[in-house]
Image 1 (cartoon, chains in turn yellow, blue):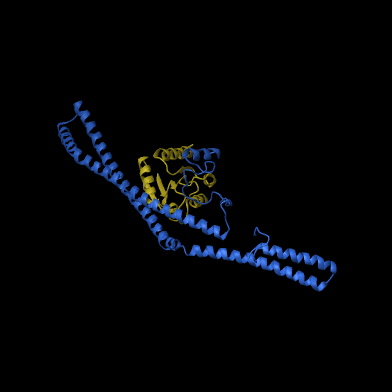
Image 2: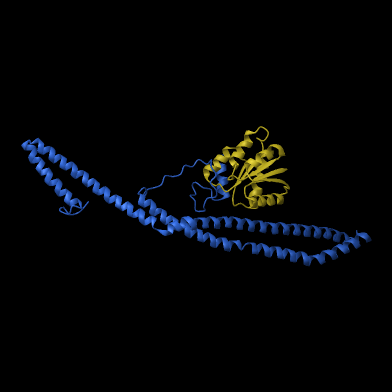
Length: 124
Length: 255
């Protein structure tokens, strides 16, 4: 399972990377915004995308929409891990096709639950 | 306007008296039909009206002028603009750097400790298995010698490794000192922001475009734009304050 972690803060990428490793996902790569992430996704054969929303350059919502609009990537599960917590924003992200939404600050258990749930649903 | 009815030429009372006398004269002249006099009185009334307007305008101009002068002469404002705000920006940037450093330092030590602990427990587990086989008399002589050496090495390394863990934990604790420094800096910035807020409210009041009673238009929210973290005190109707809230919102959308 190859995972791309997108967040503009290197500390947050490091935290997510460590938590994912604890969950048994060792194959992770990092990008600091959507603009860097999108070409990586297109060529990198990733299975799963974990992205922040608020980032300079291309934000996470635009990245999610770009992924859904790309024929090769459209089926990729996307988990948003973000501080954006307004009801409207969560609705917009859901409509854009996000598979899971974790609001910061989060716990290791929450992250695990959401990831498990995403894969459960994909296998169902 | 003035409260008195017969005052100096400076105030409205004087003007009112002038109006009254001209209007009385005008009614009389109107009945007499003397057109020249009618025109003269109407012209006088017009002049009176204009001079009242100019007086008010003059007063207003002077007030605004005084206020702006007082505001401009406030040295603190110049100081805020040229020193305090750049200083605050520097402090905030310093806070970002400092917290970033502390977070990375903490994670580095935590990652290294986890690696140590993982290695430690793997070695322990391996020896425990072999120990069990020894007790079941399943070990060859060579295997026994090997286990013997490994246990000896393990026991010897315990002291060095635990003291390494200890020093990494101490470093994690020390890395939290950023809270003290950044906390103080944030308080300084908050004090400055408060001062600017007071000055701005004064400025806006002088310009007369806002009073505390005027409600500001609510920002248009469409959920498309990232806004960053919300305060814990945010309106619970509009903002998810926990993962549970987020899950409820998603569930209501059929997730």
